[in-house]
Image (tube, rainbow, N blue to C red; front, side):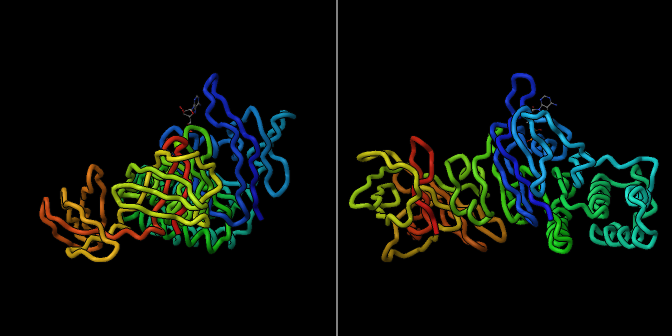
Length: 372
Ligand SMILES: Nc1ncnc2c1ncn2[C@@H]1O[C@H](COP(=O)(O)OP(=O)(O)OP(=O)(O)O)[C@@H](O)[C@H]1O
Ligand SMILES: [Mg+2]
């Protein structure tokens, strides 16, 4: 069991307000990823949870028990919180072999020998580092050391595992393999994981939930699917997805309970059922029409619901092709699966499913019409 609740957490370094009223619930068994650009407060949040930093305001509970109560100046010792932390820099003990690094903490817990050996072998196998068992850290590459650090944390069987960019030193291929391993560890051990990364692909592939940070604030907490389909504001939309989501200028107006939108993609009318609870400005107002590149289908012939556009550039990249298109004064990108070839300045037609379009209020930057 491990359910963590952060309530109204504020953290200052001097005048620098680095965590601003953070409210976040991490349910038992969640794989919660803290995602956001460099300097937005991800590591600081982990340090607050683990007890390495004391926030100036707020309360934190683990399984209902108060671990932080800033008003009472109460901060439980890190060792009393039942968690294990793996840092961006992995801090293995240099004078111990891999075996000793992993077994040391288990010996201190006075576990039986056979249990220690089992956990040691299991964690080495999961991280695919069995062959390095007798090596010292300075005889391992950065990526291997990083995997030893994760194995050490996993072996201690923590109820809560905190991981700060643990895959940052791995090459692209190993990183993909380790994503699968971490997902399996999460599933097999049932451990609650808080995972920090600025890599949205990592976040989208492994997490059960993502907390998106922006300059010390939480902007959205959602499942990967929800975050990808319906980012809550323009900044979140711009951050999530590679290639980036397309933004086109438009105008919108609420009439008869429906949202009427005009842009270079044509005219659309959206039902009230697809609209969010955000306030809608009076009369006609500027909006942003957002559509993911993979939702823009290209055809050589005209047809119902298709829109004439011009090819600006064509970037074939093996498994996919990115095509830059122009409609009037707007540019946007289409992602096609597989190799496709279009001539520069070729006239083609695109089809965009209206249910996949997001509409944002240009002024407030908030999502007003959801995709489904
Ligand atoms: N010990 C410290 N003293 C003063 N300021 C700090 C300290 N640690 C972090 N900060 C500041 O707090 C802010 C948040 O830092 P944090 O390390 O949490 O960012 P992050 O989201 O983990 O970034 P990154 O992706 O680069 O690791 C930054 O502006 C940073 O400069
Ligand atoms: Mg960090």
